[in-house]
Image (cartoon, rainbow, N blue to C red):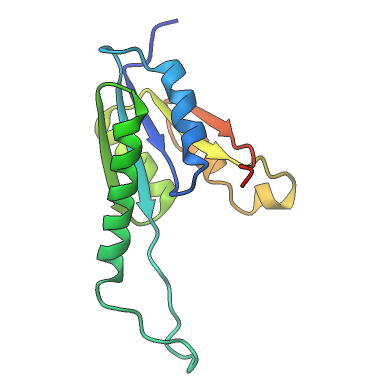
Length: 148
């Protein structure tokens, strides 16, 4: 089997992201594999018809993106993955992962899954929807609960 040349590593901003990065180290060959570390900031949806909803600060989206970039940069600096870049985008998680994967020519997408079953899986698994929407390989890394 040929080594992967371009890996897209999609993570959230939790301590569990380290588990996905650790698995990527197993697939990335120094000097041969490019890794793009990615996070998607989902838009906040507010319903203005509710009187109890307070207005959101105008710069909240910018702040959320900056926090995501800081988090990814720290992970990237500590990753030991070699040739890497980071991307923070906003929008639908599935759509953005698929868009960036196509844009960078990914031959492997790696993301985490909590392994939900039954109705939880049918109602919306990012890993499942990415798996069925991309022509490249997808590795869903089973997330183990992090003990605090």
